[in-house]
Image (cartoon, rainbow, N blue to C red; front, side, top):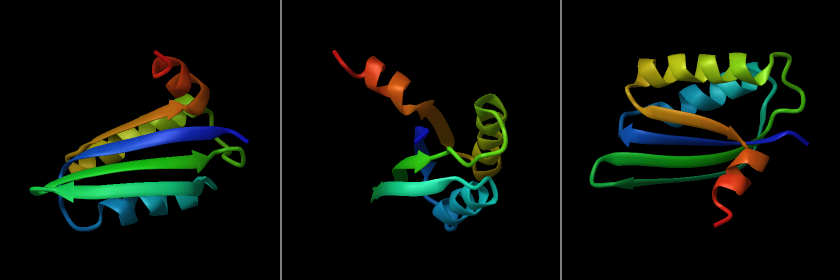
Length: 90
C-alpha cells in the first residue's frame, strides 16, 4: 500500500470534497479514511488515501493538487504517510 495524507484548509465553499474526490478517482487513488469539520466558516479536512494504483509519479500528483488548491482558493497539502509519521514522531 502506498498511503498518502492529504490535508485541506480554507474558507468553506460548496464542492471542495467533491472536487478533490473526483480528481482522486480520475487518478485511481482510493480514499481509505476522511475527516472534515467546518468551524466558523473555515473548512478543515484530512484524508488518508492509497495511491498504489496511480499511474503518475508523486511529484506530478502533488503539482496537480496544487492546481486544485489554487482553483478552490484553499491550502491543500500531500505527504507520504512515512514522511508524515516521521515529522510527527516527537
